[in-house]
Length: 206
Figure 1 (spheres, helix red, strand yellow):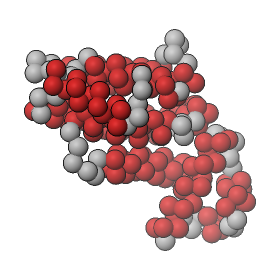
Figure 2 (cartoon, helix red, strand yellow; figure 1 turned 45 degrees about the horizontal axis):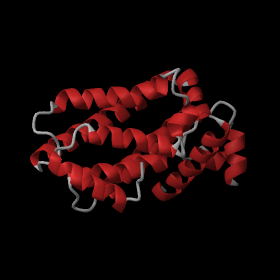
Figure 3 (cartoon, helix red, strand yellow; figure 1 turned 180 degrees about the vertical axis):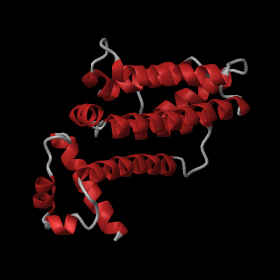
């Protein structure tokens, strides 16, 4: 039952990314999945519940990608590079039309999902900064709390900016520029040498 539901949510998530949430009806879902509406309603009561489960599934998938990326013993710089590569991949799946529909028609769900993402990003950045300082790879005098909030604000603000377009933000080169900009501002002298080596290892060339 759980595996079957996840398969449904994955396929509906693909539909939402392609067509948006508003235009995809339960009839569309039933037809696309090749199952009857009666069968579909065994998993969800209505479209509202389906949307909620799809968003929860997406958040769970992203969290799983993060944990998978960090399964190995990495230093702080390698860890950040691994996550950057993971985020770069996930950005390719970002759908402005889905984001728009979610915000307009399901605002409570939209803001709850946004808050969960913010909390996860903030925690990761803060943990990474603390780890990097302990390893001597980041500047000893940097304020981890301030920098974590500043970094989160920058990332969050890009989605709301009227200067940076969505297509620019989703461009891999743009994201990598920001990634290297962030790291070069926080690494120590020891960390700088490791950063250059890491960029070559991950084939990140700026």
